[in-house]
Every structure is written in C-alpha cells, then in structure tokens.
Image 1: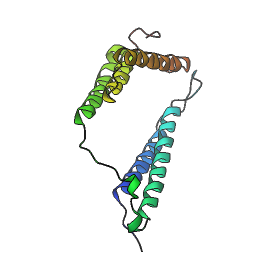
Image 2 (image 1 turned 180 degrees about the vertical axis):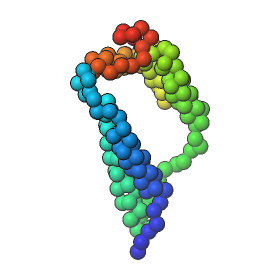
Image 3 (image 1 turned 30 degrees about the vertical axis):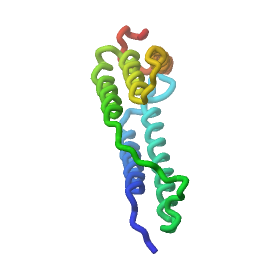
Image 4 (image 1 turned 90 degrees about the horizontal axis):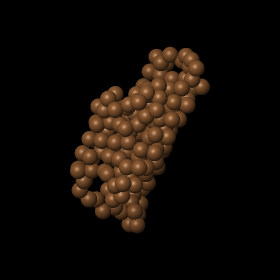
Length: 162
C-alpha cells in the first residue's frame, strides 16, 4: 500500500530543497580566501550541510512515523496536550531578530548581537535579566573576537574592538 506524504514529509523535502538551492548559490561566492585562514564559502557551506542533514533526518523520522500501522500511530504515553500558541513570545523573538538586522550596521555586530541574544532569552521566558544581558554580551563578544581572529570583517561600533 502506498501512502501519501504527510505535512512533515513535505516540510523535510522543502528544507532539503532549500539547502540544495543554497548549495548552488555558494558557487557564486568567490573562493579567494586572501589572508583569512578560511574562505568566504566556509560558513555558508556549514549552513547548507546542516540544512540538508536536518531535512534528511526529519524526512527519515516522518517516513518512519508514517509507516506505522494505524492502530499503533501514537502510543498513549506519547500523546501530547496541545495548547494555544503564545504569540507574545513569537512577536518578541521576531522583534529581536528584526532589530538585530536593522541595527547591526549602526551599532555594530557585538551590540546588535547582544540585543538579539537577550531578546531570545526574554522570548524563552528567562527571569534572570542581568545574567542574561551579561551572558549575551560575553557570547557575542567572544564570537566577534573569533571572527576578527579568523580575519573576517564585521560591522563594529569601535572598529576592531567592539
């Protein structure tokens, strides 16, 4: 018996297709590494690899779930209680991402990234405001220093420093 693809399988195929489309576009990026230890294709290649692998795993999981006999579809211990979506968290997370994209050229990678990380912690309902702000700054500052060390130029409020 042939079963029709379910929504999870279509989502997995879409994620794989997105990864393959991005892989095709990576060839348009010049491979010249210059003084940097890695070329400009490195991080896009990591993203593409992650997308294709996640899509493949999701497709495998969805295919296995779809092949279960109808009487064994959902064991009772795995039944979920569905709750309404908390749109305020989604809006907060989306706002943090949009603010990051809008501000990165003005205030630099470190401060814009700190706002993004802090927004994510707020959206995840963390109650430790000061700790979240400090950890966000330290994470993003560490990433900034790593990228500077790799020879990648990022927008900075104080060039080369912050």
